[in-house]
Length: 115
Length: 112
Image (cartoon, rainbow over all chains, first blue to last red; front, side):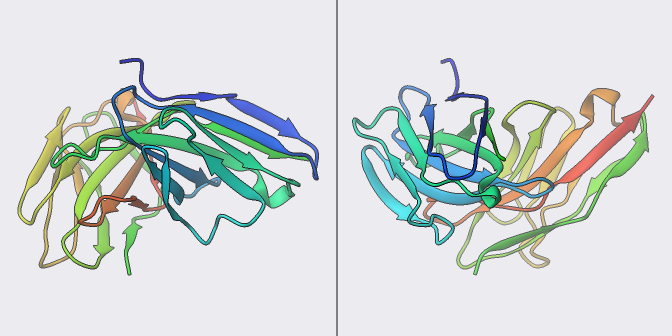
């Protein structure tokens, strides 16, 4: 068990560029979550997958954001036409959807800075 | 709706002092409650949890009791150490566990 890993750890981009982040969950976990955390705030839910199915999306997830989990393993989060307001820490978490076991384990996050 | 309110920080204590970080919640149904800790440069780590009313979660000397009557889940530790300096997040998960709702976090600074 290597934990949840996210790549890259830091991303600096110019406004208007597209960026993509990757998350590798704990191997046996069937649920994967994306959150956004801004400075001084707690994480805010963006979306989650059970296996390859995206089951819920927050209103925070505008049309410029898209997430995929094509084979039910790793996931990608893409932001198109980035804006300065997108600057935040993007956190990924995974869990096992089993009674009493649904604890979310978090990765270290990808910090995005949009210039 | 679902939400979590935490006391604002930072909280600054001397080593071996008693710690309380207040957390209250609003929720539909019967949520599970959690405390996560975030050390500088690291991801959130689960500290403790409670899944039903009157449950007490505990870990590493930290405790929190799920109080349904006061909708609270206050974090306590009898004697803090410098190594406990971190940001602490209270969170709830609705009965269907599809996502977490986090408080804004409380930064704890422990001085030697």
